[in-house]
Image (cartoon, rainbow, N blue to C red):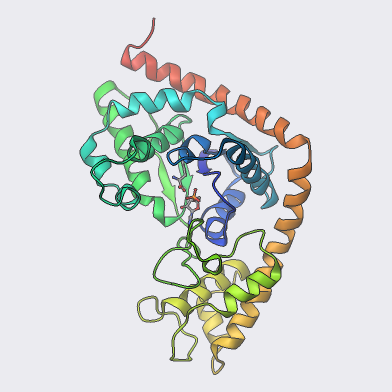
Length: 326
Ligand code: AMP
Ligand code: TRP
């Protein structure tokens, strides 16, 4: 059995990019692997958060994990701040990372917008992420394509420590979906769908009403060619719709191109609304039930205990290798 770890930040409602790029893989992996899924609340305080909202969002994400099909009997579900090893290992890895490599992280460059002084937490974000992964001797990390560079850093840090201090960490592998690894914004198919874009119609959230889903898809940016064909470079909008359709329905892109031969974008969009609404309906129903239940907190406490039991021997091994403590 392989060990799987991944995390999602408790900021805002999750969208279909998060689902198709990450969460759907989480569910697929849980039957044949030992899976640990974390709500990374310490990552979200790299930018200011309202404390009450943060707690609420942490529970929201844990409930969404279960609503999409994660089973707390099979998968460990908890919040990052409930296991102290994340912060401890973060420091050890910090002392083995370089400002040069961290300055090269594209996400940091985008978020700090080239300002000379940026929040240190944003800069350190990828090291904490590496700590999350390495703390559990993780083999596989299912994530969206935007996390590739961060996974590379985790691998580099693991290898660096192993070479210097003797075998300490498992070197993890990223796992990316074929369809859905990069869902683009509905209003601008050249940028990825994000939780924070100002235009609500740019994304489809997992808990959106059918009327909102319909609006966002029917208004989605396409092109003037009128032929349903996958071509990311020249037809990013239509290609994005086809990718989403394929990921939700399980039909291949080739099949979809055939199905819509001779039909315009209207037909494609209309059917995609139906496919999307049908796929999200059970998630929404499950979410409301789980989020209301008292069990949710117990599940996370139990998850944190199980996670801690895996993390403690790894952290002890790290301390031993580095000569920390007695
Ligand atoms: P975040 O919301 O940034 O914590 O992302 C949670 C997970 O969703 C990560 O694995 C991301 O790589 C993935 N993700 C975020 N946005 C997208 C997107 N537009 N397409 C595919 N995957 C995404
Ligand atoms: N950085 C990830 C994102 O924004 C979230 C994350 C934090 C994560 N720690 C992780 C993902 C460890 C995978 C493994 O999506």
